[in-house]
Image 1 (cartoon, helix red, strand yellow):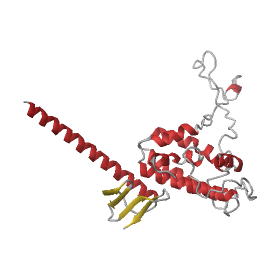
Image 2: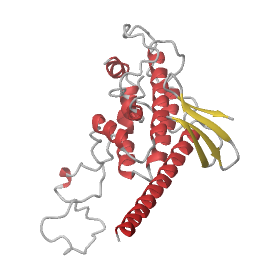
Image 3: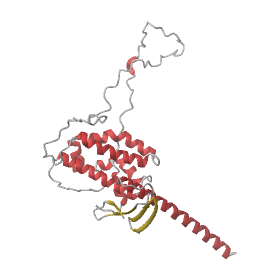
Image 4: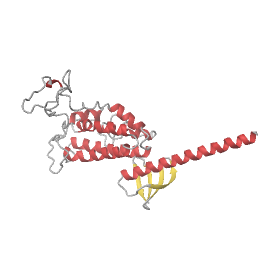
Length: 82
Length: 206
């Protein structure tokens, strides 16, 4: 009985974590999409994101472009075409 | 520039930053001491090509049209009189008391605006930082302009200002329409500060 309850709790937790991660991922994509657009670079929408570090991402765009988006030492957001 | 609070960057979100108030100095080109100096501060709009922009100084809020036929409700029997009386003007006596017309100029609480921009969830951290970068760039342009280092006109500076506001609005309008509306209402007031050398200096300096 206890095992069942534990498993159920674990499953719920996993589901919550997964949905939170998905939401987070969507947020990052949206954020990067806006950043790239603000820089006036072609992209459309960001479809895939790889996190390299804090405020450091590789964003793959709908149109096939890829950008390294990061914050440089001067505090500027840079989107470098890959 | 401390990124620690990516949020700090936010700040700016245009306006607020425009005013460079809060968000921890972004002292880009610094040169703290040296107020004023520069001579060239032509507030002449000139604007050869710039069509709609118009004069930078207090655009709205001027000359409320006479508004003739706004006859306020007659005290008692309003609907009772169907007669239009073609000739007999019959101007209601109390036509003086309704000058209101335009909505009063926005209060422009920049502090609140800045806070809202910083805290809105409609814009991501990286986007806020990116916007702050652009706001800082614009402020640098104004600084250079007032110092005589940048040969341009206020009319020309209005364009990047408008563009930046539009970018911000496009980011906010769907997710945070209230804030977008607040920015729209404060837009001219912010421009009023940017386009006034003294106001800008006080903002920029402190």
